[in-house]
Image 1 (tube, helix red, strand yellow):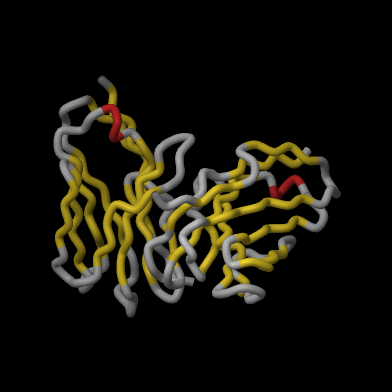
Image 2 (image 1 turned 45 degrees about the vertical axis):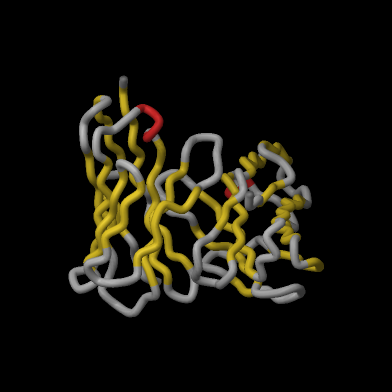
Length: 109
Length: 112
């Protein structure tokens, strides 16, 4: 079974701080790398689906990059807000999704 | 607006009981999935289904079975619930088996 690792496990930041976290995976054949945001008491929802080496995606203050050769993806949040508090999951897309354990982000006002 | 619903948000059952977790999607997706989420572990795939009456084991199928009689509905069955099945259960659906998945809100099951 492929192992998808995320770091850090948890993160506490002040409102306005920018932050980033990492998803690491073995460099091997896969279709895409997914990022999901999972807010407490809600359903996980897709943020990005990234397929190509060097891919960069952006949605508002959140962006992500993908390096397939070295096997990692970064998620950046610029100017964190309390509503960004959530668990951020990455998943490697092979013939099914293989999820990492997530990074739990808490943004304090 | 796409929607995946699960029959219960919270459920408490006793050891040995038969438990049904229901999931319904309204997006006409062919693929449906059941995961469980435990502290310190990622979402782990229990079973998935490509089509009506089709099912495939995921990474942790032991102690579970599934049923998909209609395209929109995918049920997870715990034949005889045990305490180690206390967990958060998430259902999801997608167009392709490896495409973006749409999740339900989860069912937190406690087995006492």
